[in-house]
Amino acid sequence: MSKLIDVQNLTLQFRTDEGLITAVDDVSFSIDRGEVMGLVGESGSGKSVTAKALMHLNAGNAIYAPESRIILHTDQGEVDVLSLKKQSDLKLVRGGAISMIFQEPMASFAPALSIGKQMVEQLQLHSDMSKARAKEISIEMLDRVGISDASKRFDQYAFELSGGMRQRAMIAMALSTKPKLLIADEPTTALDVTIQAQVIDLMKDLVGEFGMGIIFITHDLGVVAQTADKVSVMYLGRLIEEGPVREVIRTPAHPYTQGLLAALPKLEDLDSPLTPVPGDIPSPLERPPGCVFHTRCPKVIGDICRRTLPHAIDVAKGHSAACHLHEEAKGAA
Image (cartoon, rainbow, N blue to C red):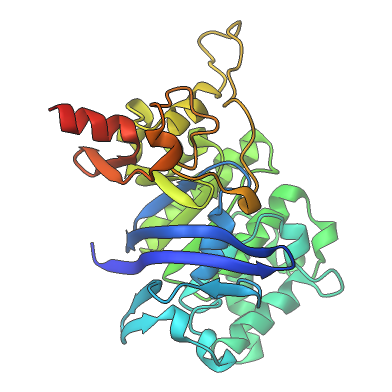
């Protein structure tokens, strides 16, 4: 596989009245063409902020650290996303090479414009095609994502569609420009399980057909297990575990990942109680020193977890975790 995007040492802060808030802290990862990466963590972990950084979509009070790099590999060469300033240059990544499915499709469509009008406007913004050709492609894409009677739906408004149809229409709109990278931010959260399964199958088909890369953002490791090739677990702005999805789910190395898996319902034992991760994720204004997870971790090792930031340690081929437990084990070996 050829490289699609490289994120290197991404650190992102927001300037607020309370001071600087660190939302993303020294995050690095890469995605190849045709690869699906699951980005997992609770609300407030920094998943959406990280994804928006890839399109330079964060608010104007966002401050990127000087060492932060986001390199997009295109057919014309490498593009340093964070160096793009002009709106004309940003069109390359905003709906061009990168498209995003946002969390709530109802909020993503303008209520006073038909679905089709918005799709046509987007296509004409990113190409020189005629309105008739843009309409033809839009209807074809609505049909491809499984929306029945696509030519009729083209003229409807978002509020006239069911939740599942709106989600499919959002996917169709995101894919109509044939992006290299699709960011899917909680695309199945508001859907019932049957529609979730259909959306997941659809995205798998699209990866195979278009060869695009996908970042699948969710808090549900069960969905990631069905969708992703690899998974990155995020907590309070830091990546704390990464690896092939089957490896991470079968042998989770970080206590936080273990806690997320333990919180999933067990169909083979319906009487067993759910065991959520204890406590709450801290406010970004009150980031704990040392390991960011130590305030909730059941396996804290004395003061080292409270004072020292752990570094990622390889626990298997392609599988790493940032945890002092593995640093101690490696030292003992």
